[in-house]
Image (cartoon, rainbow, N blue to C red; front, side, top):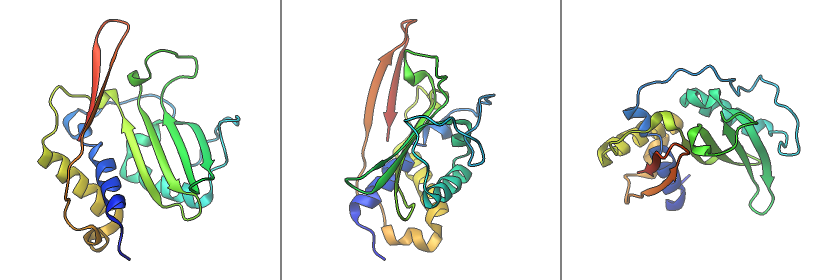
Length: 183
């Protein structure tokens, strides 16, 4: 089955956001993990996760183990496009202030099939003064896509045809500036 160019760009750009982890050292954390077997406090912000979505989340957690360290903050359906969103974070409930001090992830799935449509991970621990090279970003994306789709499945997308970038910044209470860049 052929995939559309926008879907290719979406997966490529999503996986490129993971390149800062290649540059940063692994950081150990004692935070509670959001695995599929944990019980999450029921709130209005949590909609039960469909089994197909949970299966895909478990697979993504295998490829991106740092996601297991995060708690489910919100989960909800979007009726207009039949998608399901999950927001993960290691930010304690009682903490307010700069949300970029903590790791967070936004996952979007097809509600019925569980197909991963997009994901975004932001982690201060992955921050680096050095922006990853285009080649490093491409190699990291290639590795992820091959692991996700398999060697044969990856071939359906062909070679990347464009590159994308984004940046934002925030100032912490101590005056330091944190800049997020993704390639």
